[in-house]
Length: 459
Image (tube, rainbow, N blue to C red; front, side, top):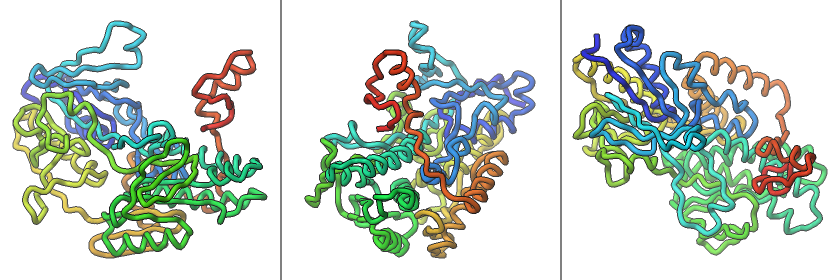
């Protein structure tokens, strides 16, 4: 039994937030039933996004609704609040919260009190002050961005097919991806594969008309899979006529022209920014200790260093890697560690409430897998290097085993099976992003600025 009534606040509904709350539901089942504990999950979205499936969602291999897990369904014994925690005062055990109704209520942000805090807001895209980036680029961290990018790519092919201006056609068929990590390489590989297949249904757009460019500031891509597999990935992408530029930076994308540090200029209507992430701003708006890189200082037991009743894991936390040969090494901020840390975090909170000793997090990184499109991939697992179909199959098998809930596993597997039997979907639903635009025009109104005057377009 817990020593006293505990109000547990979980900030974030991603990997760590969902899995920690799920674990606490199970560990504190009796206490929750007796009213001795309560769990509140504050999250910007009412679902958890399984990000490794975003590239396949963008390519149409997985339905968008199967990439997300509804939190209210998997956390029936928790209170799920859709909103943003903007500040934390741990000395007073309070968190400042804004919700969807905050603006309409006119009463200002709410103050939530808690006894135990789990801070797992994840990360946000790390951008640079590059001219035109905020105006024209798109990220690749959310399911909305993935589906928007799919719609956008197909829409650019429609523009290229219908225009009589060679300059517009060239810009529409030029796609620039910035960042050579998992997000950038997998998104580029899947979308290039999808677009190349889609060209067979256009009478005047051929695969060789498409221009794909990957820009990476360092001298290698996919460092997680090792140097050899990174070089193989570069050669595989170049074999598909993808222009891979290492040691190169994006200097500007103003006026729809991508200017690179090597002097190259590419008129383009598509710039995808996947060049890293940074800690969530709420960490800086707290009184908790941070590292030089802005992450929370944590112990191996996943408590926040120097304070009590505060816990963290995942992207927001600098957790010491007790399995590393070099002292002072932190665990990598990836899903593999986040899911395992979340389970231990839930267990340790329950142990703490019951006065039991805590356990340290120890997990040796077993490797990485990456998809480069249909039947193509690379993997470096337990020292073994795989490429091509075996790596792609391992990528799918691993992530199918990791996606939460049996419901999602079955639906994803069914979609993969059907996609193997039937042709790809090549439909763009760009109007989903501005669903009222066409009705506004029909009703005699003016389309909103967001719709850009085009009721059907996504750009």
